[in-house]
Image (cartoon, rainbow, N blue to C red; front, side):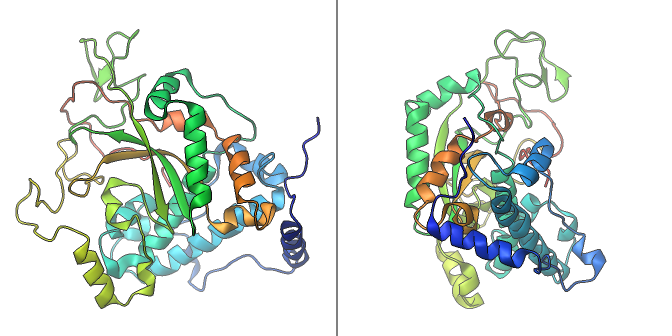
Length: 359
């Protein structure tokens, strides 16, 4: 059966017509900075699906024009603005990944502008890199954990899509792995190379052969919503962003930050620590807020209007979300899972915890 056009709303058709009429004359977003500054960050490619998405869109979700608007043009604008701000920011952040930038700027109100662009670029890439041109099946090793966490895959779908549809404002809804464990667990844990899963023998932990058979810790998942460019990472919990600090003056933003974070930073450990020290890799990038959860995001959906309004029109958000669910690449989701041993191991794995994205 031929695929029907995605656009079904008169408002969407009008938006598309206006876009196509201006497309030929509109120049791509450019930066006012010199060439060497603009190259600090570039729009990343979406792996093997990049060409397919550019030529054909994402089947039943984005037309080619809708993909260009929601990914190419929007991401280009975000990256250009990020590079503009980085060029005016002291330090060496221009050579850091967007995730590293957002983590390093999340806790200071004075860096809200830089955080917003870095986090928005990272979140958008996270969302689009989870899309597939065709339907994929949920891997067998995720079925039981998802059923245990949400009772069923259908319940997860309904809860996640309803949460996204109900968001009164732009943001992201995240499916997150919750590790209720100390920070001294292995980095880059996967069943194939770091945890001696059932059916394996002599697996490796931290690059060294582990002769002892070891089971993996059960997976637990929860949903998390972040507004605007808010981040789900533990190191950025001060910026889940229930208000936009860009609209606040520095004094009021600083007062708001103080009221919502622990201010007693005496000592390196304990409830008043300013950062939790990771036993793996020292002062880890994923240091979490006191009382916060150890979160690993594995999937997100984008509720910003530019992600769906072009193809789906006003009133088409729920239909967009339904089609998005059918285009999730569950293999990518599974690759982001952090498999942990049932008994935490302490070893020098080197580096920092993986984010699933190098961008």
